[in-house]
Length: 66
Image (cartoon, rainbow, N blue to C red; front, top):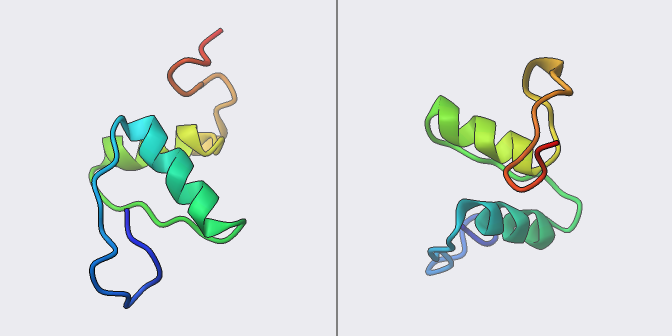
């Protein structure tokens, strides 16, 4: 997870993935969270942020499955 763009030394490792996404969203304070990586990584981040990939409301993040 990175802090403000251009601030050196602001990268850190956060595990598990869901916690990293939640911390990034909180740090963004309502701003934009950018996630890069594989289709699986980005899809998982979208689910954690409550964004339904392809508009599929049946998909739920881990821990929130019906």
